[in-house]
Image (tube, rainbow, N blue to C red; front, top):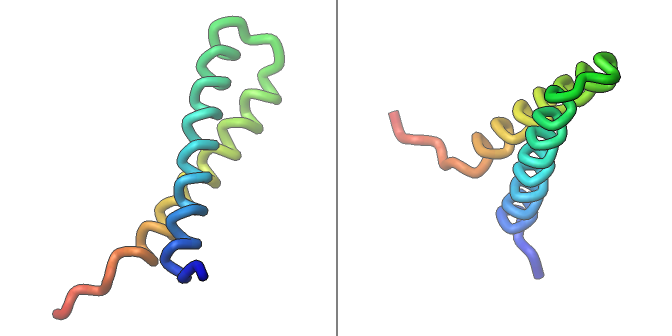
Length: 66
């Protein structure tokens, strides 16, 4: 049975993978810009992924005792 932590780690891995893939696609599209609107949409998706990755990472890091 998977724990919440395992589920979060799996989701984090998926998001990081998609983020890297988008980075590659955006880079290749930038070399031969055909559809600027599509590039903008991909960049926006990449930023949303980054925010979600950061949120998941913060959930996985235990709170420090102040």
